[in-house]
Length: 90
Image (cartoon, rainbow, N blue to C red; front, side, top):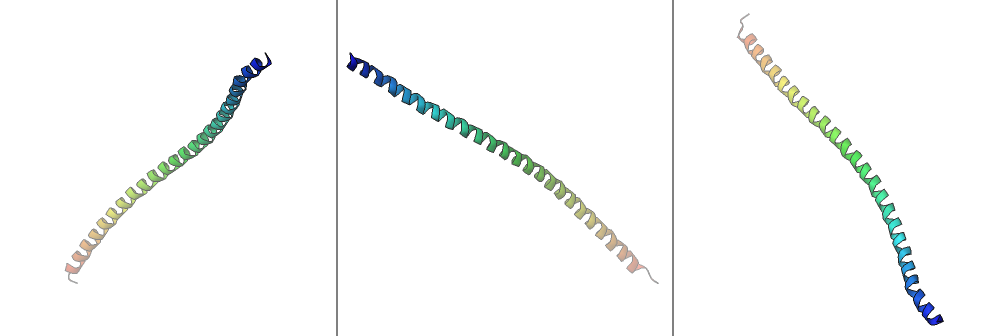
């Protein structure tokens, strides 16, 4: 009977060991999930920051184009005025 009881405990001990391993794996996975969640939040914050900076850069680029066009218009008017002044006899 002692032999039967010893044989009956082996599967339970193996099961117990597998459960311990599974619990350890679950703990590691939970830790990894928490770490990845934090990393994900950090990366999303960076994406938001980069999107804001991109919008600001695009806005500045648009302003730069407008200012260059205005500068070119002013140059053309000044050149026109200078031509008119050259044509005037004093």
